[in-house]
Image 1 (cartoon, rainbow, N blue to C red):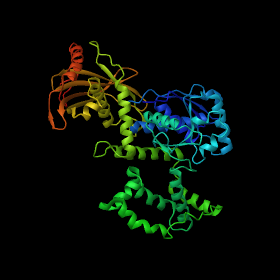
Image 2 (cartoon, helix red, strand yellow):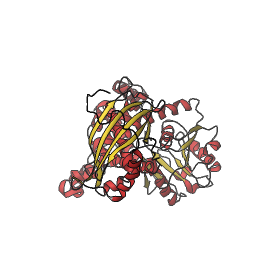
Image 3 (spheres, helix red, strand yellow):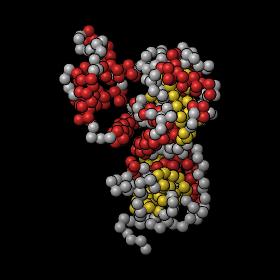
Image 4 (cartoon, helix red, strand yellow):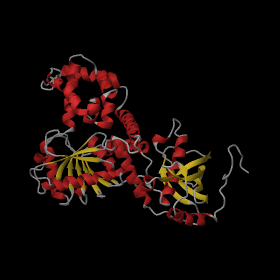
Length: 497
């Protein structure tokens, strides 16, 4: 899979800072240039929110966070980068000048994406020496969560560059969509502008206030669009006859005077104050960072719901999340795990983040079980029971779990897990897992678990194949000499000896 090895971000505002987070959390080193005197504080706050969101979003093992470095110039920032993302303010001459500086200093093979929301790439690339590698990479806020980037080439952009950009976005959990022709505002902002313009008229004419308008969107078609978009949603509305029936039924509405799209609202001081006052009443009690965290938490919940599609593959952004996690797990599965007769397997390293804790700052109960589950998944990958194996119709199912809570996981605490195989045969795996404080090695929780190999299609236990048993054997042989863990084999309520 084509990958980004080193990124540069020119501009670190709302969009640029979120690009930094997206790259860094994918394990990519990022250099930033932004002359704003508080750029480091702003990007630090964005990074903190992004890390919190990722803690809720996935338990797949993220790579080590990329190094984030602040450069003193554009030239220093782009040195050695193979993806450069420009996110300076939306002024053509400013962007053109910055892009020309990037073009002159960057490796000629580096890709250059612009975060513009509507400027034409042909206008941006006009004076560049290497215009063939410039394209619009228009993301949606927050970039670290919303996975779409519209890829738009100018007259001098090579199609191969757009294809390469699309391929490079996939490993960082993003979906690049190539727009066939350049057009002002591209596709997404064209649609948003239409809804925005209608919304302004509805507020101006006192049809509703800002909160009512937002309620109409978020409690109705916004939820439908999150999974299927517009046309597939309307296909369903056409019933058994599909899209043809829908168009025949609702097509005549297009000629009715329902819209003011051709009439631009006068956004005068009176209307600006009216909208601002209603917006303050709607959500002004919360600060911007709190609103961002609420937004992120809600987006994560929607993406998780969409990931759990009844076909097992998910819908919309949930499907993309599942694919991103599969990539992360596959990448983690290639990491070498030492099998030793001296100690259990060390399988998982993590940190207690803000999404894992309760109001006391302590890790909640279900997160312990989640860590134990992720550790058993790591064992399964080690013995060849990966996504492809499960797709083929076989897996190990957990049939029994006994958890002990011996200490507390606290916000920011580094943890690691170890697993000791107690017994195994053709169908069963019996193992003991510990969660350790990474600083002291102390055990804060243990789980004793039994898993059974199954034919998931037949719904019954079966012998594991020889190639899986062959990978289990050296682990079982090594762990046979380890002492039985304290607490293994006990029933609930039994005291320590």
